[in-house]
Length: 404
Image (cartoon, rainbow, N blue to C red):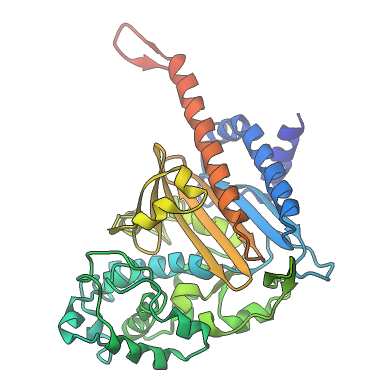
């Protein structure tokens, strides 16, 4: 009874309906998953306390509804200001999902083509061997398939070096393979989509993101950049662990300068609507054709098979466009994580199950891996069991039709 009351209150407060859904189907599925949802809420709070996480938030979406959202702890240690579902965090590399969504929309509208060379728009870019230059296509930037060694020149980002001084450094290196042939996670190269978007839309990146995604989806608190983060009073502060305890830190500008890779600020409510869009319930903003293109597997990412916690579940892994595609046991999971000084972020959804999860922390803790994998292992298991139970009750009539 308590589980049902909790879910009823949550749905009353948080339900969103961009498109109408059959009430009976959604309500039945949510009711059947009620024990698992309540157990995750308990588990989440338990892990936050165990790891002394200063502040966090999570949200769960099913079809076109936010079925649960919760804040935990405080925005800043030493303050009484609580985290709530509208508290803004830095989402770090989860920003890449927005960059890929925006770029895919613009490509579909004809602003540029995926197979165009990057140097067509950024002629000053060059590898050590210029023969590689025309091989680097726009698609390779967002698919993390440039062939360049992983995290090339991230050290310069963290040293607060300006982007215009980092780009020439690529003239000192060559790809480890031909572009498009192997995986190498990038922030600097990924962010080259920004000048391409600016040139082909006559609009800066942040404005394009607001116009095409934030505003049409009515994301209440999403923004780009340090200034926007600081202007939001309901924001979480970053915390790092030192001498056995968490300490608040100021946010620095460095990764904000690479907005497509790590420049978005958002709450779990913002990211819930973004997940609902990925599930196809905002077709006027994110058409199904674009969504299908985004999650096409571009390059295998074998290192992901060794990730702590995840390696117990992942059978195969690829990078698509700004998203990872995991084979999570028998299920496909679309995922991206983020990590920047003092923050962790996780965003994942199942297209088949129409289920999504957001987790945001204002602390650099690997507990987020435990939370995400436990959620998906539990929910997939419960849904599979529901299917088996339903099929066991099915019969075949005299006309050969299955009745369930």
